[in-house]
Amino acid sequence: MAKDKAFEAMYKQIRLNRTYLRKQKRIDERNRKVWLYGRASEGVCPYCGEQMNWCGTCQMWSSSCCKEYGTCQCS
Image 1 (spheres, rainbow, N blue to C red):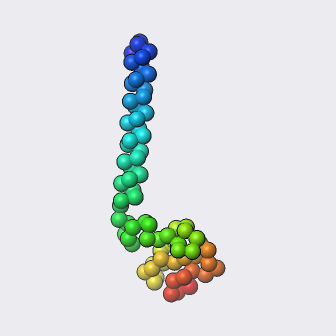
Image 2: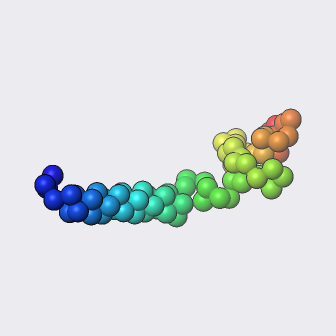
């Protein structure tokens, strides 16, 4: 690193800002991604708001997070 303390502090601040922007970009890309069975936001339970499970047999989202049995056809 440089021997100038002011330059070193500025360099560290730039590094932290770039790291934050890179992480935020990853989060935004993950939220925009279309998953195999639709967007991840489609699998949110309308009763409790948690993520539902995908039932491969029925090909639909199953709300087994707040129900004793799932809400799909085969449960």
